[in-house]
Image 1 (cartoon, helix red, strand yellow):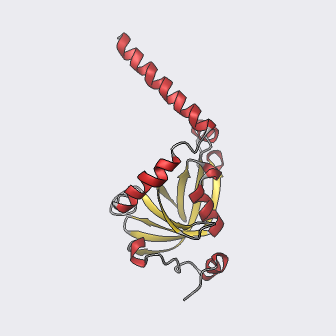
Image 2 (cartoon, helix red, strand yellow; image 1 turned 180 degrees about the horizontal axis):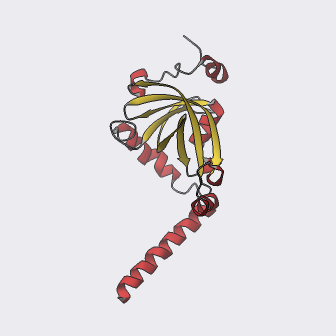
Image 3 (cartoon, helix red, strand yellow; image 1 turned 180 degrees about the vertical axis):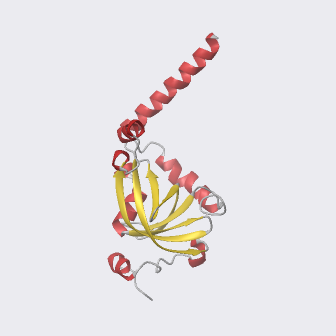
Length: 179
């Protein structure tokens, strides 16, 4: 009995320490995720394809203008998707999407055209549950709401680096040409 209690106490203490470290520096581990885990998920087709719960979000860098693919966990809502953003406003991919005003996402072998990004704190979500949303708020977790304005079967790779599928008003904002 004492051994089991000790193990539970160690696990709880480790979880509390990890949460405290996350609150102090939420960018802990982002380099590993960006350089190792995310490319692995995208290259292996784990994110976005088949029956995976993970989607692949295609967005354009604010400063570099480079195309980026980021695995995300989208949840369908009435007119689009809700995506958890663990780093909140410090998330580079979320800042890219908000800056561009649009993005594309592959989920279940469908490509969705998304726009009107809004970043909300967990407690600001319409269906927020009070105890859980307060914990998420204290950890800096936000949600990105995106409106779906188009969809087609296929993959992001079928069009390569092209992001010309964005509506004309988005092309003007990003400086993309309609060639």
